[in-house]
Image 1 (tube, rainbow, N blue to C red):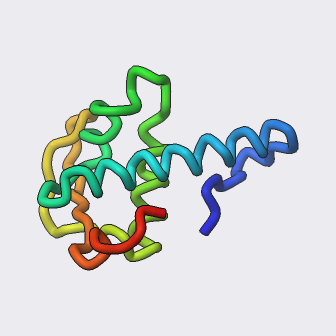
Image 2 (image 1 turned 30 degrees about the horizontal axis):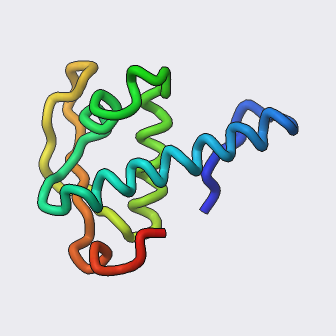
Length: 104
């Protein structure tokens, strides 16, 4: 799975830098799920808790959630909460079996 989707057609060294940032963000989101296994998270909750003050766009968090879902590490529940932008957001939870595996 790609860590960065090069929709803006970056070239190196910017592409390499963006890819590294995306990979780090994905790891940090993964750690949040592993740290509090019994809790579900929305994109806004993750963004507000860890990334907003660092200038990371919420779309980067949504990308990380999509990647982790595609990796079968987390799953999107049927439940929603009102998000930061006043729209309903799905709650994601860790797959209980994944919490017993290696971190990365």
